[in-house]
Image 1 (tube, rainbow, N blue to C red):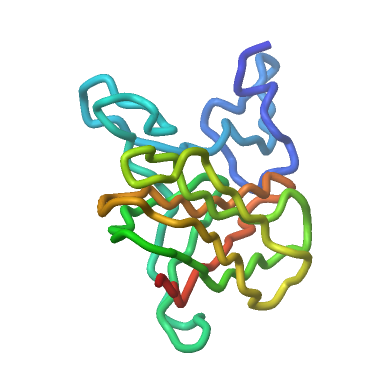
Image 2: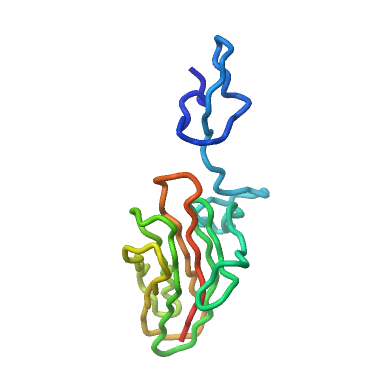
Length: 173
């Protein structure tokens, strides 16, 4: 049996490779493409000195948002990240999130460790149960120096096909 035949048969996509040796076809999926490598020793998680693959399934949604449109839409499980420039002193960051399915695992926001600014460990916050907009965070810490912090927004839900998470209204202090 080929790898394509071991795919998720509940998906609604027909793959040209989903033809059995006896000639009949079936619905299948070959998995979700999560990143595109453009060369070099990058990784999906960005844990190399050369950075991260490009994330697929990230869109600007012009009809959904809170408090107003547009919003960031993550169509498939994966993450989008940005650098937050901080200065010395107390810092906090929060964001509004909406996951269209009230399933687990829930969306998360992670501030990645940067000892140069006094963030000595990753800080993760997880969204509560809801299918509406909720505030995720805040993540708080005291910066000892100015510098960048990677902030990651994760759509963690693998339970069903096409279950996006929407992100809007970042407040950073």
